[in-house]
Image 1 (cartoon, rainbow, N blue to C red):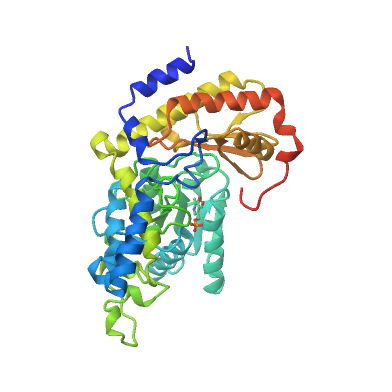
Image 2 (cartoon, helix red, strand yellow; image 1 turned 120 degrees about the horizontal axis):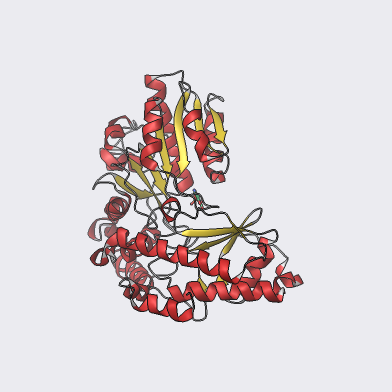
Length: 420
Ligand SMILES: Cc1ncc(COP(=O)(O)O)c(C=O)c1O
């Protein structure tokens, strides 16, 4: 029997519950959008104040050395690495996800072109996050239209789409709309079998599900700092390259920070050793410091079982939400688009609904913050660091009430904002 008491009982038994205190969550809000923008960690304002007043304010430019600012991209990268199955010294925090994708895409294509120039197809999914497809199109254009995107309509079609023409398999591990998760090991093996390399976008995976980049045989990965890593709006992203490719990684954005000796100020570019070559320009230290605080909220889960424990809770939360919504909102036009099998989804649950935008706005007006993805998806993220089972129950109740009363049909919920 599911009811609110059952939700409270599950919260009382939840060993991860104390981790919620790390966040400054506003009263009266159920925040189911941490898959889009993670909430503010309590530590972040003080950390930023210390960096601003104590480091920038006092030591000025000397802080690049005295406060270790220059090492921050690699240090934060080392903190993120274990969350995604990467080793120390393999991953760097820098730039945005889109820019990092441009970098790894160009570097990967160069490696393929050196070995087998006939491979000119990049296999991806039609419903991959648009920036991934746009970056391929822009880079191919820059390379004289040499590469073409081969888009499949379902994950089942991927193995058959890989062949002698395939240069790369570019996939987002957890789909931003449906929440469906790919099997990284199987698809990486299939790509390698076909002679292609893989790039994995971990925007909806890092900090949400355990990822095993090295063990699963991935070649390149990029990911986002402002979603489940709680790094703040526009936080730096990250970039990982399998150790076997590092020596051949040629940075297309060959800025001075990726140079072997940036402060020699010599006219010729020479890539730095290891991760430093993934950098382009001067790192955004304030944003990087906020990202560090965000990543620390996940590392704080280590004594409680780390990503494995977070994954177990996330699966229980998403199962419970599907159960609650299907019981409370049956026959109201919501169609589950997220895989029912918890092993095949990330940490979100999405429903298709004809008028998903006004329904989403009506929920937000009642304090349940999810989001809308065009054309008809209502998306709810369940970050196990701070979401409780009672939040799940209450959110489903509010959804049921909004559908029962029809208040989502009110004119005030129709107008679209610039950001959805
Ligand atoms: C899967 C995926 N990839 C890439 C991006 C783009 O990231 P950015 O705007 O930080 O470059 C997003 C943003 O939501 C995303 O969901």
